[in-house]
Structure formats: C-alpha cells, structure tokens
Image (cartoon, rainbow, N blue to C red; front, side):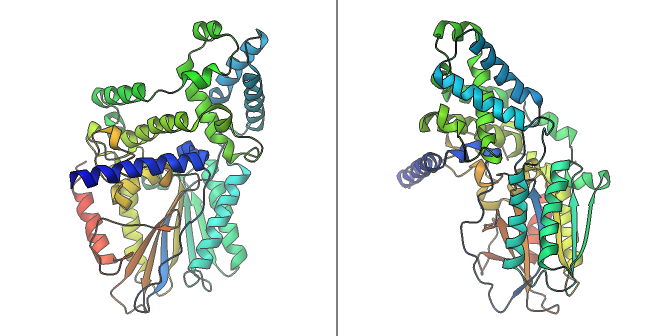
Length: 422
C-alpha cells in the first residue's frame, strides 16, 4: 500500500510539472487568467431541477496593486541599461516591463478589460446552464466588497444577466455594512498566520527550491556587476510577479515573460514556493494551528442563512457575491472542497497530495452552490457544488454524487463551524 501511495503521489507531481510545461500561465497562481470550465455537468437525479444559486466569486484579472511592483524591476533594469550592463535578453525584458508599467499607470489594482470579459462569460454560462434559476422576473441580489475591481466585476456580470433576461429584478450593493462577511479582517487569525515555526519551515523550503540565479543572470552582460549590485532573489520575486500578470493584460498574446526568462524546471520550482506560501497563509496548515480557513466563518454562516430563507420561496433566484481570492481560497479549505482541507506538515508533499493553488483561485475564481428539487413541496433538496464551473467534491457521504443532500451539507457545515472558538 505504501508503494502504491508513493507511485500515486509521484505521478501527481509529474502531472503538475506537465501541466505547467504545457501552460506556463498556470504558474502565475492567483494571476492565472480564468480558464473557464473543462467538464460537462452531470444531469440531476430523479427529476430534480435547479431553483437557486448561492455564489461567491473573485474579481477578474487586474493590474498589480502597488507602484513598487512595477517601479522596482523597471528602475533596476533601466539603471543597468544606462551603465551598459544589460544583455540583449535584458533589453527585451526591460521593454516589456516598460509596456506593462505604462499600461498600469493610474490603474493600480483595477480590473483589466480581460477581467471584465471573464465575468461576462461566467454570467452567460451560469444563465445558460441553469435557465430555471433565471426564468421570469426572479430576484438576483448581488453584493460586492467596496473595492472598485470587485464592483466593476459585479457590474459586468449583472449587465450580462440583464441582457439575457431584461425581466430579472436585480439589486446590488457595495457597502462597509456587509464587509463583516464579504471580507472579514480577523486580526486575531492574522497575527497567528506566520509564527516563527511557519516562517522557518517556509524559508528552508524556499531555499531548497531556489532557481533564480540563472534566469536573473541572463538579464545582464556583466556577472560581476550583477553579483555586486543586484539582489537577485528580490529581482526574481518582482519579475515572477510581473511575468504572472502579463496574461491578464492587453499584451497577453504579444509576449510571455515566463517563456522569455524561465525554463520549465525553473518555473516549476518558483511556483512550488508560491504554492507553499498560499497554503500556510490561507490553508489548514499545521504550522500555524490549521485555523486560517475560519476567517471565512461569517461568509459560510451567511451562505447557510440565505439558503435556508430562499428554500422557502418557490422561485428565489440567486445570491451573487463578488470579492477576492483571499476569501475564495480559505472558504474552499473550510468546506473541504476537493480535499483542500487536508493538513500537510511536509511542504515537499503539498503539491503531490493535490494542494495546487491555481486549481482554486485564478482570476475570476468562483464557487457556485446550485440547489435542486422537484417543486417547492420537495423536502429532499440537493446541491451541486461547482468550483470554477467544474463539479467538485465534499468530504460528505452521498448516494447521488456529484450531488449532495442539503440537510447533510448544512449539518456538516454547522458542525465544522462549531469547532472554532472565538
């Protein structure tokens, strides 16, 4: 059994390498541009039909948030260029950095045009996949965090739904009033995120997987200058983030900084470090107590509360919520979707065991809980859970997979929430 398990994890690690080699953009982690669904939906059993959707989605592709994320790599390469220390590869990369920096001027953290298109597409597919939910003049209630990229994402989704059915009764809001569940800032959990143990384990892991010297040295024609004047580790972190962001900009089909700079092996090892960072920060990591997913306890309570209310309505419509990956990822872990609730002590086995960040939170990531029944008198309500529009699993027994009985899911969630003490 141990031998079979070892083969299984090794095969999974190899498959991740192959995925990243086939699509370098996946190494962008939370900058990965939304790929859309890859699977067909399983028909509902026993004449059940969708009647309500509870949703939480991340904003679409955005520009980087801080000036320094553009300014530092640009200034570093520009200074080297003035001194005649850039290679031909470095000159090309400098030009790409300049283009990205100029496009983001005055738009830091804002939604890109690709980000808007992502939410239009998601809304259109939601409407087409579950037409019963959006039939007639049903109510669609939408909430957004107060961040502009989330508000504009919500606007694009709602305008698409309205175009498909002008009769929809749509309400929307973005207010501090709802931030207690839309984007809870839990100071207690935040302080517990990176204790000394977690930081020590993570730094050792990053040191083992460091693969930045060769790609960064390619930018310069004078190795002595680079070693003496450039913090190669810092420059690599900045360049990797910039390279990750290209896919969400108008230059997505013009150039790839990933392919300009990194080999497939270097890309993989850089991604491993980012994957481990997100696991410790928002997953059920034993290195910080495994409680970070409970940052979304208020959101899960709200989902249950609104679902309980809507189940009593014949045609309830949908609750749509628009926020951030820092909600989508811990909520996924809190629910235990696709095994993301597992606690992994050895970071070396993290990806091998299926904890792969880009599968959860690309730009415009979304979690859809679709409710099914025969009619309003049907007490056996089923749900199907979709992550990024693909069917997902929960750690709950079911006799109708990939569907689950809502009463079982509800009890599971309430029991999980009860284990956390404020």
